[in-house]
Image (cartoon, rainbow, N blue to C red; front, side):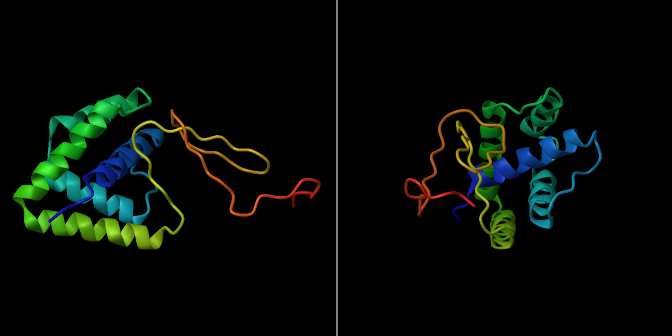
Length: 142
């Protein structure tokens, strides 16, 4: 079974960062993100990459190397355990159907808001979004 370990690792890192922002209290996570985190932690236990993520999150950012190590650990676990692979795949599908319009980007990215746009996140690199209907010159924005 092929799994999207990249997206799963992103959700795990996101959950850890949210926990740190809440000073160790469980994050206000949606059920899908929380479920993915629980499945991965239950399977990987005290995997060094998970411990590194918790430590690095305390410093304000989980490194790309640690995120990649989590991704590789999830991939390896899924190859050896079909039930785990099916469970995380189902949890990811559930999360995506409940969060229409949400995108996860891993690696380098950059958010730039123009006009009435809003950019939120901690990213580095380039992200380009084109409006399907840009206003013509002279038209006022709502």
